[in-house]
Length: 233
Image 1 (tube, one colour):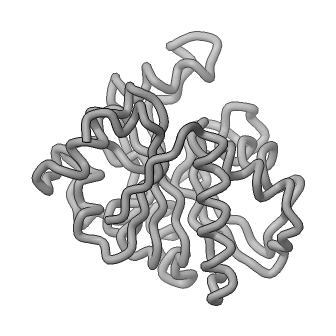
Image 2: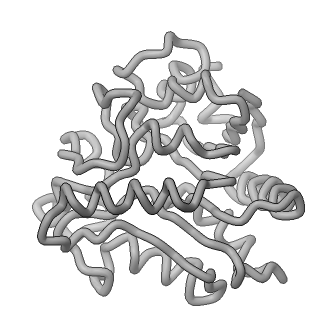
């Protein structure tokens, strides 16, 4: 686990972009992508670059249950707005949150990941240590599954909605085992509110009570944090 402290989110985005270019030069073909505010500077670097992603595949971590891809709060819409419209991929995959059979959709998505091994996975981290939507207590051997979101995650995500009651309470998420198959993982975290989770992820025991702690066992993880997120290391 390599930890790099930077001054701000813009520097973090530039660093993650540099790491991406290195992996693309080495032959990376499939990118694992995340949503939320954390990767926005990274996506901005890609959009403003000369990179051609049209021969690459992207696979997103998760999607809310109950939202269509046209819903402005869906992760499909987020990715279109912040990356795909400017830099289209050959194929871009997200779970279908409107699937009639959610368990079958989770299985389909896991098979899709198996067929497109992820070379470069972007992650954020929740205040409770979740990665993707894998909440505390999620089994380390979990594959793509339907998740009941914790109250703290719902509250954290409510900033993107008009009111708390509008936030979906379930999602389809890559499992922890799915994420750990990625060849390279880059986790970014910014702000003092992430400091506890970062400290426990790096220095604590590997426990399902803090899902991100499993990254201690991955052979190629880069942690990009600003000084506030690194303040308890």
